[in-house]
Length: 198
Figure 1 (spheres, one colour):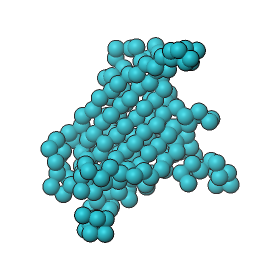
Figure 2 (spheres, helix red, strand yellow):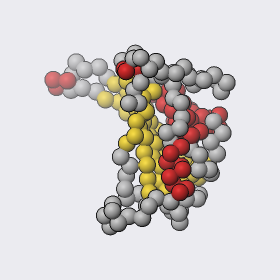
Figure 3 (tube, one colour):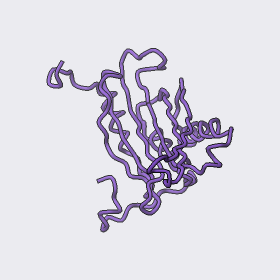
Figure 4 (cartoon, helix red, strand yellow):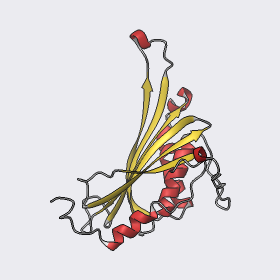
C-alpha cells in the first residue's frame, strides 16, 4: 500500500499526535518533529528533544506515539508511547547499584506529577562506559545512562506525557524539574538561536 492508498488517519490519532506539540518546554530543551517508524503500528508520530546547558548537549531523547485501533499484545488500549533518553553522567553515578531503580522512578514520578495517567509500563535502564584505545587512548572515559520505556496512556491528550518525558530528560541531565506551580520562561523571539524548535 502506497502512502496515497493509505486511509486517512483516525480522528483519535490526529488529536493525540497534535497534543504532542502543545507543550511549552523549558529553554534548555530543543524539541523537533521526527520521522516516525512505520512498521510498529498502523499510525505513528514522533518527536525528538535535546537538553542543553549553554552550548553543551547533556541529554537526547525520542518519544514515539503508536496507534492501533485493535491494540497489540502488551498494550492496554489503542495507544502506546515509546520513550528513549540518553544522558551523560559522572562515573561515580553510573557505578551506583541503585541507579536503575532511581532512573525508573524519575519517569514514573514525572508522569504522576503531570497527571499523565498510564498503564502497562515497562522498560530498561542501561549504563554505558566508553574507553578509548590506540590513537584514541587519550580520549576521556565517558559514561552514559540510557532509559528505554513504553506505556499506554489512558487519554488522547498526551501533553502531560510529553512534559513528563521532558522532565525525565532534564533530571537525567542534572537539571532539576520546575516546581508544578512555576511556568518555564518564554523564549526570546528576537534571538533566532534562542528558539531551537524552528
